Length: 532
Image (cartoon, rainbow, N blue to C red):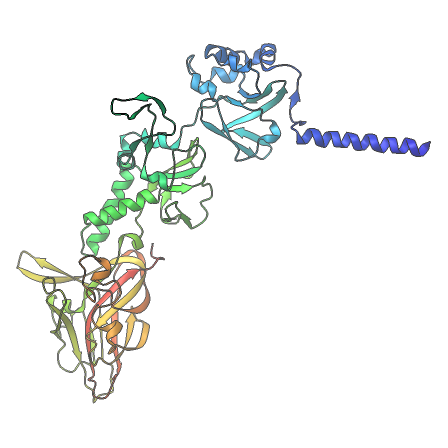
């Protein structure tokens, strides 16, 4: 008899445990009060929600509570209604506080997005021991016969879609707003349009439905409520400041910002502003946009403390934006023969080029004809002669020079060029015919030694690596206006803009009879991916 009693106790305990698990699985929870009454009966019995319930009646939404369905109502008490600022006819805002299906407290997990009756989603977030619908804290939850009521701390404001937010930006954001929405195209939605007859020519007549298409949607469908995005938004001021900075940088390189440069820069801004998902962690150095553009958090600036919460993501305001060097600068290139245009020439001590071991005077001369005589008829190189009978260093060291024409005296001049600081690939070219072995230094550090510059590929002038044909594949000419031979990776140190010096040093003859001489044509810098 004792055994039977013991087994009965175990069975009762087991069945009781199963009931708890069963109830938990199917939605029962100790975090909700459970009442055997309807939603309408609940609100009639709780005067603390009378103003909220009255607003449901004024907007006709009380009828939703009486239907044969399960819904969730996100209610506020009278004090919260008093400070909500809602008007009597704000049906959309009240619809935002009702959704189909009963969401119990246990269903409310971080990241859950709930579609309200007005078609706009709100988001659930768990913080410590509290749960929030958007920014409103859930104070109390009640499970009823036909749904659930969650009391929240403040009446929510319906969040708008990123598409609508951007489209309705004021004129202080007109540059980015107009550039995005000028591509909008209205398209006929045949699938969802209803045929209503046939015209005289036999064509079907539709009760037509149209939708808006934008090419950006191919990568980021930021009008969708079923995906989440993050947008970094630049104002007109931020964009204009960005381009003013770009003009300053170009001026120091002796260049002007061309229309093609502006197009590249603005395209980068638009492609760097859209991100998949909601971004909240900005501790990482590089963030990849939906277009594969890199946003470097140590360089670019956004207001991370004041995001705009959208129904399908977040918008952060940009405070400062910089076009990365490796995006806007394809290459920086200069010819060594520009030496002859300086105001003071060798052997003046103020000469910009530093020569060692020179026998006679350095000179500039025509070596060969180019493939594009209309642009540049000849390859012009610098010759630095040395004495083969003397065991001494033969070298030339020079800064980057920019050639310009002066209207005052009608002559060409040069000035020392500055470039954006950072990492580059250094390329050079020579008149390779019978050229000796050489070493190349950058700001005093050797970059590449024992270069056999007599090899025509890649050292003869600028005939390889991104030639004119590569850059202009339709009308380009092969082996013209390229980068030349790769010397190696160099770094221009500093902050902002800086200059540098390249040194070419004679090592030894490439073959018997090779003269002790240097014949240098050009140098070129191409930003690496690290040069931001």
